[in-house]
Amino acid sequence: MANAKKGELSVRLDGKTVSLALTFNALCELEDHFGETIIPLMTRLQDEATLSFREVRSFLHVVLRQKLPDATIEDAGRLIEENGLEVFGQLIERSRVLSSGDDATPGKTPPEREPAA
Image (cartoon, rainbow, N blue to C red; front, side, top):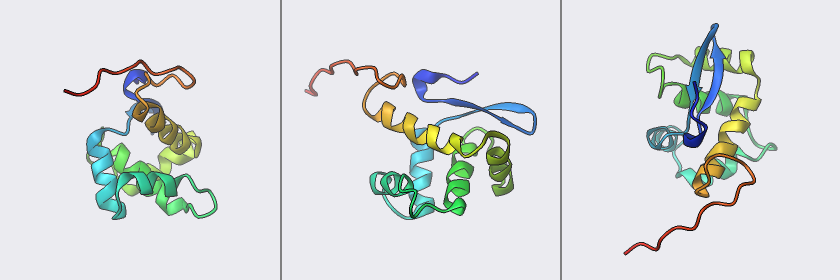
């Protein structure tokens, strides 16, 4: 089962439930794969005018491999076919919520943080 507080999302792949999340390792791998740092990458990936299906599939392949290391690019394509493109948008949204310090509940005000010493 997916842990919403960690930004995980439950999806179906080949009849099985898989939890996806943009973990720190996934973010690093996305930077390596796409050749740019994460903030400009995420901004670009949210631009529907320039986003390609290949990029969406590659993005989901990287994320999928965090839970299923042997997952192929074709597995990522099937994940989209079984769950819809909304999976991509939901992961992007969860990453924004988590980076704001929220508990992955959109619309909730994040708690105040203590300043670093």
